[in-house]
Length: 97
Image (tube, rainbow, N blue to C red; front, top):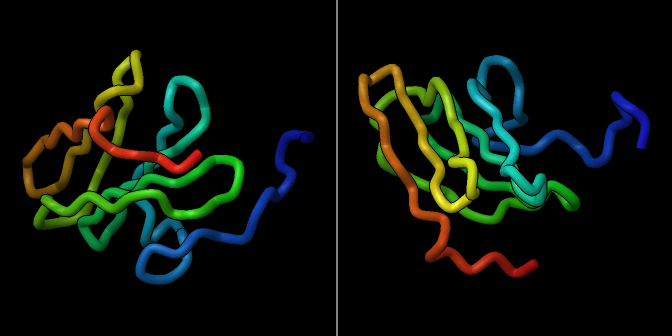
């Protein structure tokens, strides 16, 4: 794949992922999944190969401003403009990959 090649259609949150709906993106250390934070306060996990949604985390009150994976990929951190930082345990999720 060349840089900039579209692999799959835009991913919806509560619409399409745009600058106004998706406020944060991060790839897992192994590149198999990515996380997005949204203006709807959701944190979403996606399959990097298919673009399909894997999981949704709910916990923030306002827009998610950043997401980051731990170096081992077992934890996802998300921060919000509501002043919270939440840690999500990914080791307990079953990804059908």
